[in-house]
Image 1 (cartoon, rainbow, N blue to C red):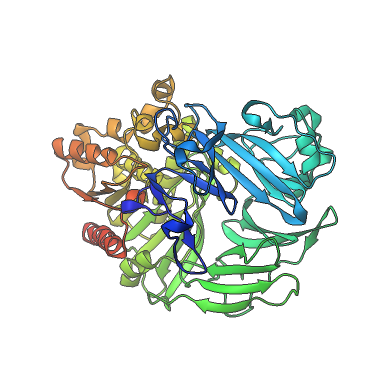
Image 2 (cartoon, rainbow, N blue to C red):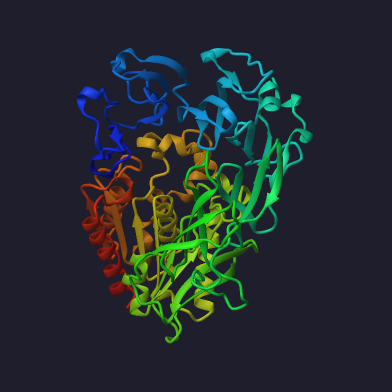
Length: 578
């Protein structure tokens, strides 16, 4: 997938990994022009593809509505239509999975919303005695809730729950024989006893994701926003606890919050999931570069450190700590703080946040904030507010739609806590966010400008009356609500920055910087353009605007462009918060 200008639309070309080159024309490669395309191999000479095939082939969100089976050398116009969703869906997609033990699944997803999808199975091989009842689209609907995530492991189905179901808590990971689940014609045909619990959330402990090897499942668990591993092994139809990857006792330590507990982020990927017990591991924190390790789960030996990223900024005097602020409703909200030990406060401080789409902000090595901000003696803060996934689905769902204010109150609570602790002053405190985080910082401008000395709003949503009519915006109504219904009057208008900035308060607004990209085909650059223009028209004292002509939703598509964008942002903050 090659993205012209960094956008979500991609050109499809086929690459030969052995010869290390794109396939020549005589090899009849799969190739498509730039579009929002999804594609996956069914076999070496057949793919499932969803793309812009012409009128009627795309959803209202701008993604594929049809899945076609496309054979090598066949004109795309002759590819067979095998699955079709509705125009109102977010997207559809297909996959063919060759599992352990000779089991094969042909699956289709009809993504009816951002967090909901109907799952279908078209064929299964290698499970004796299983009979499917095929209906529309030549597929059988899988009798599971629409908001679960479904995965496969040998003859088992793995089900990640977003809502409580059958006595299992939201955020649980459960497994069941595929035969039992796919034989069910409705959810009533399934019972709690059909499933094994592989993960159950506890207070402030959530499942982030997992990696699969030949016989094991390595869970990456967030424990108060610090990650660790839990491992299961599947043998002869049974799941059992197993030893997790062992990290080196010395060289991989990232940071200590003062009580011996490490603040770090670990992640894990299989080397070859169907035939090997080897896993790649990464280990990092805000103050330590990423280490790449290799572990053999079969031997249980300590992971071997293979490589370590260059130290891009001097962190010898830098301390990483975790703190908690009290939100308006009394909720304790965690945040990370990165600052030099040797310099006291108050100091210029940057508060970064996102708070949406169940995305977790973890302790990752960040070169730009380290070089551009912390090394100069300033303080960097990362907020883990509601709307994110730091504590699982319920932490996310607590700030959906009408409860969006909870995310903003959490962020404001952290801002006040930083001042109360003497870390900074309101005049020295800046905030930054991008995309949904740009909506967050746009709301800080509209709701509580007195808390900040400068605000950075990057590739943002800002006009919540029209967001669902621009590019991929319709797909986010599950997160924000539908402005074409009573949602607008009931709650959406309250957090639409474009509609809530007020000329009567123009002297209260701190300096603000907008950044966006002309080639952003996910969040329309019109959001940033309109609010920047409105603020300037009303006479706000300092409004800066930078639009890169490339970059897609990332705002920049090359290292040079990224360097320019971040330099502009940190120079703006340094000047405004001095």
